[in-house]
Image (cartoon, rainbow, N blue to C red; front, side):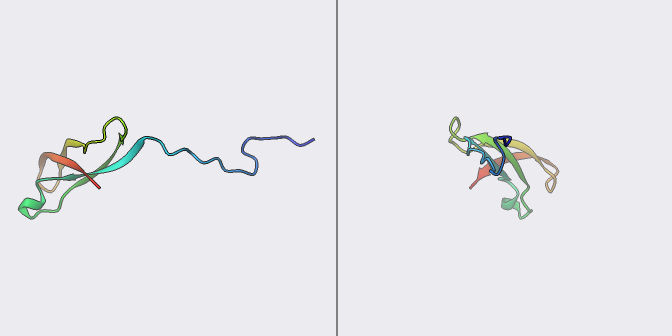
Amino acid sequence: MAHCSPLRGEIMAKKKGKVRIITLECTEARKIGKPPSRYTTRKNAQAHPERLEKKKYNPFLNKHTVHREIK
């Protein structure tokens, strides 16, 4: 009699959820010729389909700036 395990011989695939990993990029750095800072975060794409904007720290400018979602 063999023991029947739900993971035996199969890899269970995780469903693709509504939460996406997005990239935030500084909006001010390129205007003045500095490299833009980038951050990654998660967002619920179904609840908030618009582009996300957050104030984050840009180490190249030594101040907090608005970072906007790209792609």
